[in-house]
Structure formats: structure tokens, C-alpha cells
Picture 1 (cartoon, rainbow, N blue to C red):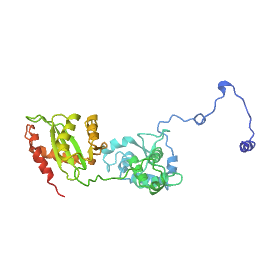
Picture 2 (cartoon, rainbow, N blue to C red; picture 1 turned 90 degrees about the vertical axis):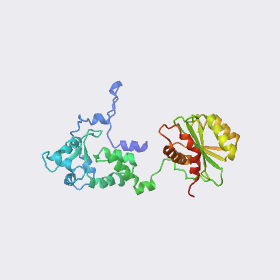
Picture 3 (cartoon, helix red, strand yellow; picture 1 turned 30 degrees about the vertical axis):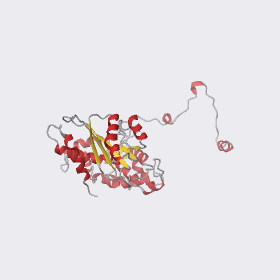
Picture 4 (tube, one colour; picture 1 turned 90 degrees about the horizontal axis):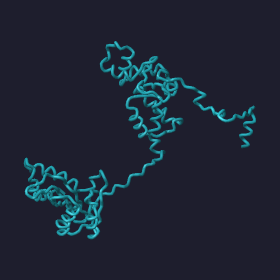
Amino acid sequence: MIRWALKLSEFKIEREHRLGIQNVVVDVLSKNPVDNADGSQISCVALRALALNSREQLIREHREDPELGHIYLYLENPDEGSVNATVCEGWSQDFKLIDGLLFYAKYCTMLGELRVHISQSLRKAIMQEFHDLPLAGHLRKRKTYLKLRDTCYFLYMRKYIFKYVSTCDRCQTFNYKNAIPAGRLIPIVSNYPNEIVTLDLLDPYPASRPERYRFILVITDHFFKWSELIPLRKASAQAIANALFENYISRYGAPICLISDDGPEFISDVFEHLSHRLDIKHIKTVAYRPQVNLTGKVNRTLMQTIACFVEENHDNWDRFLHELVLFRATHSS
């Protein structure tokens, strides 16, 4: 407070008391009124901020730009025979040529100003000006894009800026990463038979004759890659639990670990009760990660093989399941 009092003592201040609604604080907008901006006013501040030698350099780069040079020539002289007028007529509606400079006229800045187009040869210098210099501060992708968006324009602007910032060495070294780091990749390794068993459900197929099967429960041993194909009439949790116990566990014993997806039939109370009763560790795979479940690879081969042997009526697909199990057992090691 003493420092402020000493600083204010250098000025001659007159205090005036205002009552009621007369005490209105003047803000920045009322002190600096802005006329109705319809996009016709061009800001030269953007040009001074760019890493350019002169205005003539920018005009020359506009003429020689491989992306929009033909648009510049068309706007400069629509009767020019060296450009395709049919193509340029549609593109030229988004641009304006003012005092020799090419501006993007489709969208204006927040102040209603047009954005100057930056040719392909000058983009790296622009990015160094707005990202690498101390005044830029090596901001992240979004803030760098918003800063440049209110200043200039070029094709595929967001993609170019995001790629530039992503490959910046200083940003990768010093910027904090708020995202949770990815976990370690832990492969699924089985050391002996029946240690890890994966299962999945193929559904629904056309009803077979005469058994009326519509589903296939695929059970695969992770160590031997041996598969059991069990046809089912319905895909309820009770039917799947009974098929697993009667056709696999009763013959080979209970596995140590069981891997399945998070389908409703596999996360039901019936299936969880079976796992708890037999002391089976039941692991559910995460969504959109099918490669964790080995049975997914078996299903891909199985569907292709069934499609090769079914007839046109598609009601005899269950006749070849035993042969397909033998086919699946023959693999290279």
C-alpha cells in the first residue's frame, strides 16, 4: 500500500463522487468503439507479425504457390487463358484479391477481418514465428492453432499445425503430459495344457436341420491351440454354462484361467457362480480389443471354412463341425 501511495503521489488526482446509476465504469469496448465490420477491412497487423521480408515477397509467393497460384491468376484476370476457368470459378468464391494480396473470405476473424493466405513455401517460417520463438512459448496444438487461425489461413491448416507441434523436439522434451501413461504390454503366456482357456460365441446362424442349432460355442486351449466346437440351440447363460461343464470341464478338468469377452451371457450370475464353484479365474477382455482372446482368431478361420462347405440352403452347417476340429488341430509349430 505504501508503494502505491508513493506512486500515486506523483499525479494530481481529483476525486469526484457519483451517485446511483451515474457511477458507470468505462470499459474497453466503450472507449474504443468498433465500426460495423463486414469483412471489408483488412488488418495489416497480421502481415507485420509474419516472418516476411516485404509485402512484395508475399505477393510473389501467392503468384507462384503450387496450391492456389491458379486461383490468384484467375482473380487477377478472369480471362486468363493459362488457367482452367471452370475449376477456378468454384474455388475463387472463397477468396478475395485485395491490393495484390490473396485473402480467405469464407470465414473472418472475431473482429470481422479477412485472413491472409500463406503460401506453401512460407508455412515453416510462419510456424517458427508463432510456435518456436520466445514470444510464442512453444504452446500446445490447440492454442497454436487458435492463434494462427485469427491471423492467417492455408489449406489443411489444422492438420499441418498439429503435425508440426507433435514433432517439435522441445515440446516433446519439456511439455508436461497430462494423459495417463500407457500400461506395459504383458503377453498372455501359458506354460502347460488347460492352464488358460478362451471361449467365445458365434451367432446367430440359420437354424440347422434337423437339430435346429443356431449358435456355436468355441472353446480353445491356449497352450495346445486345440478347439472344441459345441453347437447350441440358444445362447442363454445357463445353456452356455451347461455346455462348458458337460463338454469340456467334465472331460479335461477345470482350467486355471478362463478368458472371455464381456457379453451378457459371460458376466451373468450363472456363469460367475460356475467359475467361483470350480475355482476358475475368469478374466473379461476390454472392449474393442479382440486380439486378447485367442478364440477370435479361431472364429475367423472357422467362419471361412464353414462358408466353403455349406450348401445353398444353409441348413447343414453343423454337419462338418467334428471334421473342422480335426482340421484346426493340424497347425505349424
